[in-house]
Length: 80
Image (cartoon, rainbow, N blue to C red; front, side, top):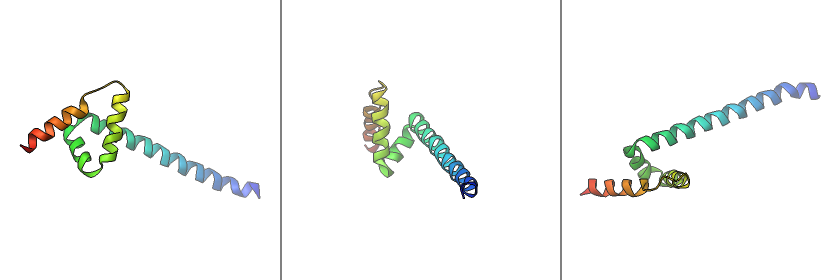
């Protein structure tokens, strides 16, 4: 019985590994895009503000301050 479950366990493991790798690459792509594009951050603030909040908190934890304030200032000036 254990021998027949081995191929199934390997397939499940490979599937979980692929999903985790896709998640890691997706998170990296999203962070990189938000880190390099203020316009993309503005789009994120409208569609997914909770994700943008996580971005701001993570860069503030790393010691980079003022990004949130720069974004808000630019967005307010562009409305006027």
